[in-house]
Image (tube, rainbow, N blue to C red; front, side, top):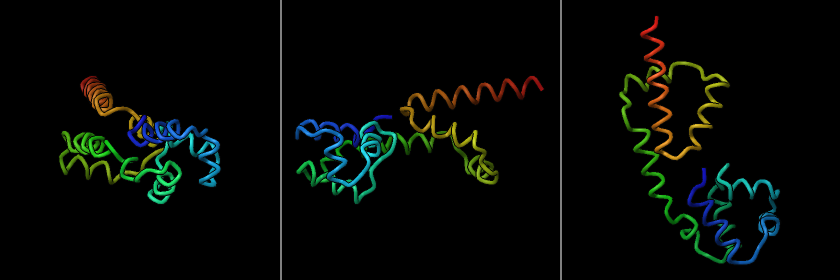
Length: 132
């Protein structure tokens, strides 16, 4: 999922006329690592974010512009329809590779689509429960 950080990294890289390779070289990273930052597959840690701000000659806060709104959506998504009992039920079980894969796929969706996936999963679970 594209994030605001991803957007700003690409924006400032283009504004400075740099290639992904040039940015990666300045950060002493593999180009693929930097590409993951721009595509939103991963996010840079705070130290890397500070280095990126220096490469682009901007304040690190400019790279974080709009992130607060993204976090509000994520927090609202987490808080929606989750009772403490439900949260404890899920925390007491080991997570399978399948569940981890599913989690990463869903995590990369925009909040609206995550809610749709959750609604569909609940619907399917209820149908299965009613058939048994």
